[in-house]
Amino acid sequence: MENQDNQPTIPQPLVSEESLSPEERARRRFVGWLLGIVGAVVGVLLCIPLVRMALYPLFAKSGRAGWSDLGDANQYASLSTPERRVIQIQDVDGWRQTISEKVVYVTKGPNGKLRVLTAVCPHLGCEVAWDSSLNKFKCPCHGGTFAPDGKYLSGPPPRGMDTLPVDIQNGRLMVRYEYFRNLVPNKEVIG
Ligand code: FES
Image 1 (cartoon, rainbow, N blue to C red):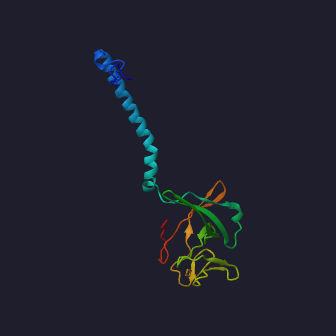
Image 2: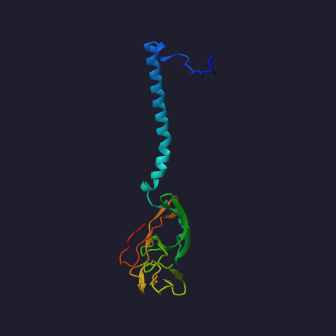
């Protein structure tokens, strides 16, 4: 908009600050502060999920979630030779989650209690297999052998097959998969 002298008109506030009463000015300042504080609080609240997501890998535990179900525990009551099972486990590492299949053997210990063995050879990690004709476990890589309960029999492995934590939950045989260090004489959990 231009005045009669063709000079641009400077827009004037509808109500100038000076024309306000001290109370009105204080009220406006208060409302300004209030809006600022509400905006800051909303900003912080919106940032929390982003910060948590960014920092999650630093604080998240690596490992695998929970137990795997090996079926009705009663089906193993008359077990006479090791039975091969494949379980699926979920590995968690920061944001990354992977599903992998692991071979385990359900067998019985010397006391007749159920035990579950990992099929990973404690020598160099090959998959040990049950050989029913020999009535023992045999590793295909370097010929290590193990008794039906996983005890060391012969060959280069430094110890017997590793047992996994087991539990009976609501009549189901549950196993928690673990990894063990190879080439050492004593069982050592590494993950
Ligand atoms: S990896 Fe099993 S005997 Fe070597």
